[in-house]
Image 1 (tube, one colour):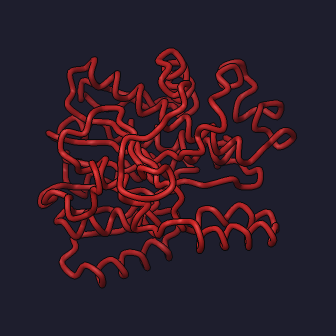
Image 2 (image 1 turned 60 degrees about the vertical axis):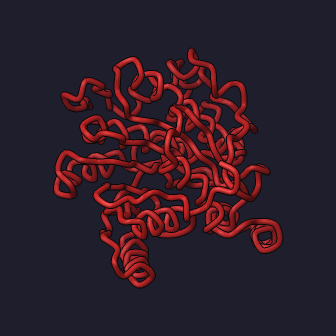
Length: 328
């Protein structure tokens, strides 16, 4: 994968793709480059005005693009279910590629529509539910992949399994990410560790079912997007916001570079299940296999996170392709 770039993306003609959080940053670049190479792309975005604007921009930059916008709020499980149901009109039973890209970073304490801490609920639970609901389409499509975007900052913290399983988890007032004890960057790291544990456990379950669907993960290194400044802006920390903006200008690579890991994981031939790719240096550059914290490779931890995620979302994965069951 030395010096891999967008010129290495194989022809994507005939492939159907969903990219979450595609209205800006690496999500937009990912959607644009896949469309440029022939894929039919759904831009799945929370904000309708921004999603529509991104679609117009994409069609301007890639006049031949087959693309459309559909609303998706990963912080609201009812929106996730509505999106998955509505996707039947996109390409029938086919889905070649799901890019779980959308996310929030280091926000002040917030909860999702379903009462979960916002970062865990959006970055992990929303994508867990979406992938499960779209699994029958993925299983029915030869060569399908699921790529989930994590972060090198996952190394700051692992999952607090006790809190997830003993009633003091993301919905409880005494939980580790409750408003009283909330630490934004630790909560972000937990959600990104969850992304990697999810990818590993999904890979294990797909292999056990004899499926050829590949689940991989990526990270953008340090890429200049609006993700980094959102938390500081929401908290009213103008000095922190200015420092982050300065770092984005001086140190970070552009979103085009940050998207390379995701595009590589999504399209490079012979990508292995549970791969984790990102900039070779960790911050910027061509994609390469990336460091991952040891707790993200513990199968017992992944199994317990999976069970907790099923309980939180009400989504059960059906690996035999008979449809995904949902309960309230």
